Image 1 (cartoon, rainbow, N blue to C red):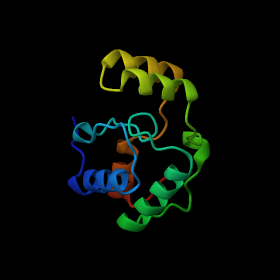
Image 2 (image 1 turned 90 degrees about the horizontal axis):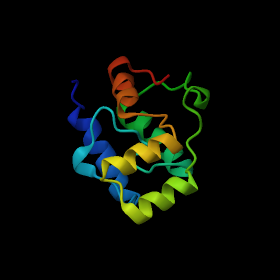
Image 3 (image 1 turned 45 degrees about the horizontal axis):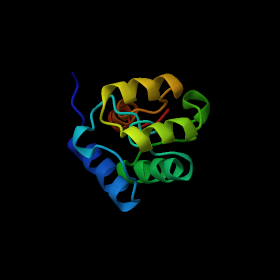
Image 4 (image 1 turned 120 degrees about the horizontal axis):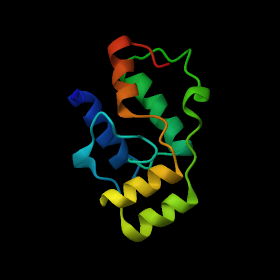
Length: 119
């Protein structure tokens, strides 16, 4: 299994802390972590995240389109389930993934760092 680059992991952790994104497990960020479902980054936070990411890692995102990923908007039902049961239990993750399909993952960001382009 491919490992996440330490600089990318540090960036994600710093972003979540600076923007007070709560109810996430920062210790278990890996290549398959989804930004929207696992890290709870949606809407304006996602725009800010992408902007800071491309600036920090000098990524070309001129061809980036939300059509590929769908614009991440939060799911009220997933938010309720996460609020009541937390998000560390595997069954909660499976139900949340069934209700909301993750779109943008850490592996997409890592590929962008390696290639210099976010598609």
